[in-house]
Image (tube, rainbow, N blue to C red; front, side, top):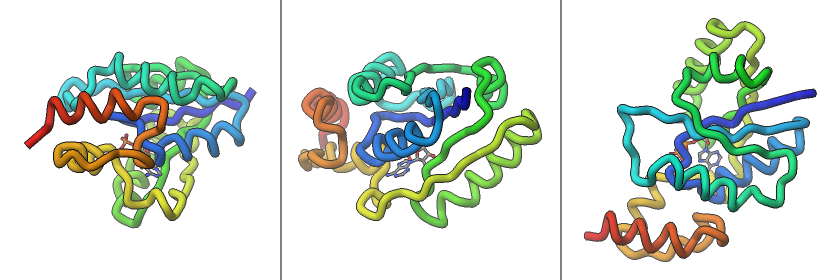
Length: 163
Ligand code: ADP
């Protein structure tokens, strides 16, 4: 059984992330979307909410599982018998860091490949941080955040970040 992991902060999940999830899920028997818990990067939404948002928007994808982990990705992959890490690449600026991470992960876990999926053109500008920036100016997030979680995400972001 082919198992892949799509790791990230997902603070919150965007339509760009969801596009990668759907495309990656079509390539593997099982895709584990994992919120990587980093105690130094607090973020905006608690991890439990990020997981809940991801579960809501992937509920119709039967081979997708959502998890959260504070472990090192290379170790987490071993515990889940995953052989591949999926990353989305938006621009050249993503490449340098991601390439370095891919090499480190393979060094730590030689059985672990990294697969890069190129962002769809209409999502290349999209990131969780840009959605926060826009929400802080009350810009409607329709199209940036999946419809099922849009209302809650918009409301809570505006409460926390409004100028
Ligand atoms: P960000 O805060 O930049 O959205 P994450 O850590 O949540 O970043 O991203 C997890 C993964 O998703 C990374 O591989 C990132 O490159 C990828 N990704 C993020 N946004 C997009 C997008 N709009 N299109 C494709 N891939 C994306």
